[in-house]
Image (cartoon, rainbow, N blue to C red; front, top):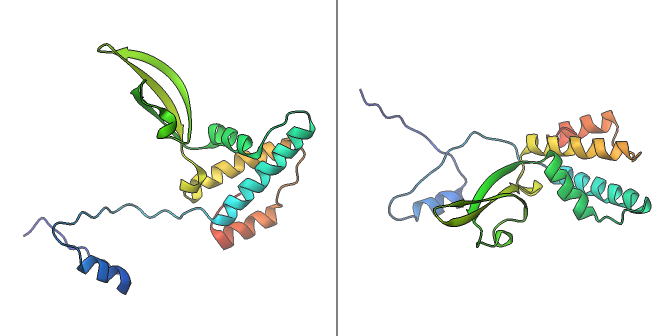
Length: 162
């Protein structure tokens, strides 16, 4: 009895044609399926970030919606810690990051950064966590957010919980 199994893949004709044209060895990665976050959830995220920025600016803060978004990524988003040689310009490799420490190893200086994933890379669950945080921030400022009924409609239609 063989210790190997068979995997069958179904795809459309366009991708099947592309697969049949590949030469040599091919690597295929299989991951557990996760729903992508919806574009409407992303639009709602930016709408709330804009409204939060407007309220904070009226309160004397002069803040941009992008600053609100980055703050939300830091407070509620997904992140990892990476360490690189200090001579490497982090901004060339990461869009959202902050330095968290420096250290020496074998005579070379290294910098550790907390790197934040942008919401365009989020799946449904990750986007839901981010939106929950942004909604809470908006409500603290007295900003109208969607009703529970509207949240249910978004969940049913686009698969995102808010």
